[in-house]
Image (cartoon, rainbow, N blue to C red; front, top):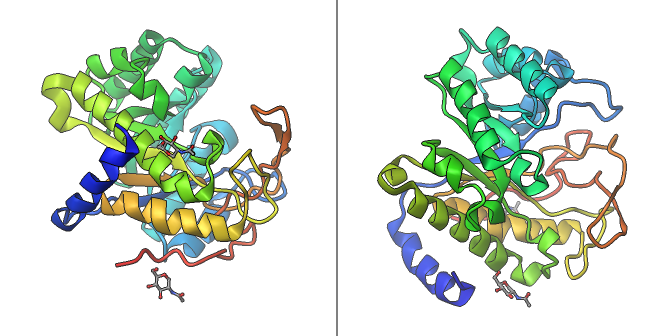
Length: 303
Ligand SMILES: *[C@@H]1O[C@H](CO)[C@@H](O)[C@H](O)[C@H]1NC(C)=O
Ligand SMILES: *[C@@H]1O[C@H](CO)[C@@H](O)[C@H](O)[C@H]1NC(C)=O
């Protein structure tokens, strides 16, 4: 959908939409010094986050004993967790699946879902058919929990994920970063809405009779703050991150789409990566909060 046709429709739709999406946060499983988080670390995280949200998503159930350590913290602090499975390799899948089998039973009340895969299709590490069978294996083990997958918005929009939708999976989180699409901050919200509407519309269309059962949300979005790297026209900075949050994220929630913001806290231990532009990219400044758990800007959405 072109943004020119989307925005008037969106603005017209807002007064009619009474339900709001839920904000959640992507949460890493390592402390600033790179040690694995223990239950007490997750409890301190949750104390810092509770004014903003009570939902977080994680990426691997076994790595750093995430499921084992986070579930008691979620219970103690009234949080809900989306647990992750890394299905790209047999070993990572087996380890995560075994951790889920060990720690989920009896704790379903704090598990808001399980995602199998994080951008697997984007990285081409599994085919859609292979990913579908991994998702079904997890779904069969946990019939009372919503199980789905997370991928880049364009892998949903371009049909790559169709076999998964047609295979009966109903939980999809689409990642969308206007920043990585080289957008100026002033066009970031339009780009983000365009990404999410394309992904959602395509999934609903392909789902056919299942369309009403689809639970669609945004799996990751965000903007780096002061100290982060620029990416073409996308300039890092705390002011820009605040503008993207207030306009893009708050707008998406008002549109009744669940959003997981990437990410909760700066991950100071993370090494630089290399961007698609070949330049060194800082990975340490994506948090809504600093590594010391201090908020960086106003996260209250406009009424
Ligand atoms: C602004 O975003 C829209 C929606 O994604 C896109 O179609 C348009 O090309 C973007 N403008 C620029 C200058 O990149
Ligand atoms: C935070 O942002 C909201 C929404 O824009 C606004 O209503 C509120 O006054 C702001 N709070 C502060 C302390 O600036």
